[in-house]
Structure formats: structure tokens, C-alpha cells
Length: 137
Image (cartoon, rainbow, N blue to C red; front, top):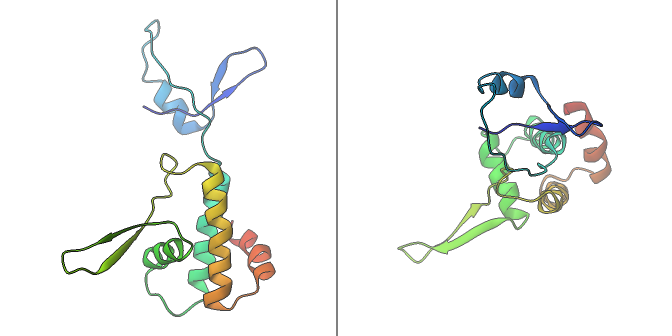
């Protein structure tokens, strides 16, 4: 079970979200539990990335599937795994952007490079993208 916690001034931890509160209610009082503490990636920034993808998808005509478009953007931004298949054809697969797979710095780099890809291939103005993504966020 993963929980998001916030440290309080009195050095206690408090659940961060209602969904975490529901999870912690299932734990038995007086029992000992082991926790691994990590600072998660910025969830708001992750949501902002998907807002960028949604904004682009709503304002283009090349793609009929937003997941395929997102994966192609990630690949074109340079975040992919590459291999040669049985026919000798080079294949590329977008790297996972899950919280467990990518650090905050790598995700920030990906976000910036995806914007550059959008400017290059979809001919949108970079500042317009930055300004307008806030409406989807």
C-alpha cells in the first residue's frame, strides 16, 4: 500500500489526500508497520503534461488517438528504448513516464522537449502553448 503523507510541525505525519485517509483506516491500531519514505514527483506537473497533450490533441487533425500521439511525442523528444526486431527493422518504444520510472528532473526535461517537438511538427507558437496549457490544467 502506498500512502502520500505530509510532515507536520510537531514531527508527525498526516495523510495528504482523502484516498490515503481511506487506506490508512484499514490499518490496525497498535500494529507495527514498515514504511519507505520517498519524495514523489510533482503530481501537479504530471497533470500539466497531460493537459498539454489534451490541448494539442484537441487542436490538431493528424491523430485520432491521443495515446499514440503522446507516445510519438515522447519518442520524438528522445525518450525511447530502441531495438532491432526479427526482420532487422529498428523499433522504438516510448519510455514510461510513470512516477517510478522517471525522476522529476528527467520529467521536466521531457516536458520542455515535447513542447519543442510540438512547435516543430505542429507549427504552434511556443509562448502560445505555454500560455494556453494553463486553460487545460
